Image (cartoon, rainbow, N blue to C red):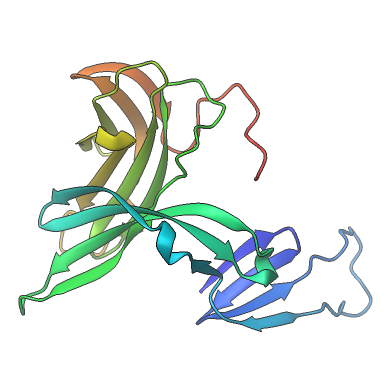
Length: 218
């Protein structure tokens, strides 16, 4: 299940059913009676992947997990505008105790189109699992710089580094086994871009180091 904004209102997705709740006019006064809002229901997934556009971009093995970076084009459900967008994600392949392979979603993956940012920099997509740990995919926008690897630094002093071949760096950091379930996600605070071990750029993990306005949507 997920809830996210769209130009037409708030969209919730539950088991393939999409519900659109148009946003009402903002007001500082409490209405005398509840305001009824239209709900538009539509069955089906939030988007449809165009099968002929799927591309495998990179693979990396970390602690027995095979991370596959995949890009594709997807057509959004008409409730969400019906437009076609470039999308991507990291698929994780794990071998089970029975010897079979299991696939699951690792994290998202940013688009390949370079934003209007101070280069070099990265756009990172992350996912944290209470049982497994941290998954991340950094799309590298190197500009004219030579970037050979990307390093993530966490608040507890831990760090992880991955090569930037194909302008993508893939990460998995295992959740420490402390005997107690974690209460907060373990997410990186700082990203470093390196040229053969030398740091050439640093940025906060949660934002771009930009001085330019972002690109408008396609």
